[in-house]
Image (cartoon, rainbow, N blue to C red):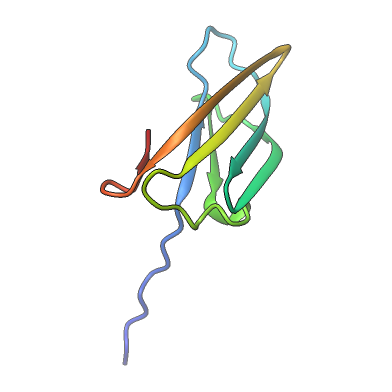
Length: 93
């Protein structure tokens, strides 16, 4: 009997690091060169929201130097920043 290899799915984790109280919901937009995701999500009690890479069409196709623009909105505030993909570690900086 052959063992099935478990599927691995990359995730993006957003964590609220501001002053309390933690907002219940945030709106986010993730723009990668080959796709994007726009949604509203609920933060857990630790102030985190996990987004599966499958929810961002085309975001799986990233190489060294790929830039991903992110906008996160909560309350009447918005935070915009750019992530840079580091192929050696497979992480965003």
